[in-house]
Length: 296
Length: 302
Image (cartoon, rainbow over all chains, first blue to last red; front, side, top):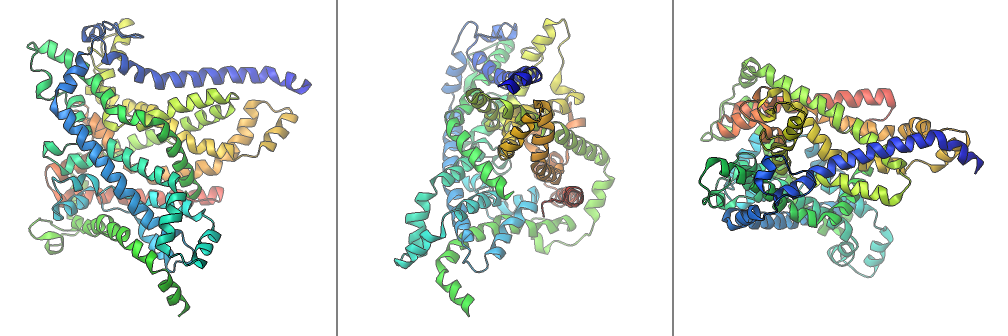
């Protein structure tokens, strides 16, 4: 106790600095997110005048009304949901198919097969040869071009393999004595035991697919196949809200103001699905990073 | 013979491997084979195999092009700044160490929940947020500048602002998530070390310097090597999205240039050569840093 008291002085200074730095940093992260929310329901004239700081001013849902009245956002939403689901299935199934056999010490030649995967962490063909491949496979302007090229990566295989290696050998030996085949063992023992790692794989794939826009940008020019992020790019970056959103506004100035409002709104609309998944994402992504870092 | 028997026993496992291996061969190795077009005069009609060899012609063309040095400078500068300021070295380490010192578990959880969040925001949304916040007439930042009597700054159309914007947004988006590995490493440090140091009268600053930092040094080394190995791969997406005609003097980096030349203008061989050049630099950097780290600290990546 005596010791503790003596310590206090120099450490109080530390704690104060710590609180200020971490508090400031947390605010710096949080405020922009909060601002987008309040700006999306404020009158654009108030935003232009710089009156929106802490609370929404002259609350209006005009921005959201315009966003949802337009078809393109819905198409993008539907496409992105579909792509994300497809990517999640393809990615997790292929990753488990690669990772489980490689986790087995009694698999002859497993190091050689592992090398096939690991090499791709360090070498890749680059954008152009990949583009030419997708073109040769006649996948341009199909959903496969958006989903397949990035679906599986070696990093996910390493994470899953590390997890499978932690399953006890005795379990499999016992099952084998009972006459359980490898496939049956995987299906009825490994998969149920591996729900956490499968969740990691699914979420990794969903986030990557939901947030990605590059594959769609280079492989797809049919706008009915656009994922949400690409539609968002036209609105946010290129300042081109799609047709139906602004038809009733005549002056250019007013159009510009409503465009700003729409921008705030679409940011929220796009981020919402991942935001609702956030508690899950936080838990499983942290897990994924931990397992991945053990192996490095 | 024994091996053959073991292999036969596990035939189902080999069966499982077929599909993923086929995927990797098609989507990863075929493009690697396709890299040879960097040394050929590729035309879609003749195909990869049938196009004539031209040796280093396209590399030479790139080295001699008028914007070669600008692009190299932009790429190296952007990646170096990124490495030295935001990821993965200084800022995430500082935040992780401070978080680790927070005694109140609930507060720590709250801060973590907040700072991990931006990691899940897409690059498109991030770029959109940047543009909205920095907008000259409606942006928050310019309102603040205006409140102090300053003139509105045209952030997106001045080349000088490109790098600061890029780096600061990376700090905002990735710092939190980057702390996870360091927090895990810090949690692995033996608590007896801290207890003994307290008994010896060490304060928190001293304990951080001598116990925490020393303890996570191997982790820092590995992450540093990986980051340097990826130095020239500085994110295409954000640079591409934040690029405007007016800031192109700073924002044109190798990857955006490859996209422009290869995909938009369909000069496949030329842009494949640039991409290959970039990959080669990366590999050399990775090997050098790994070598150096092994010499200095005794632990490298391979």
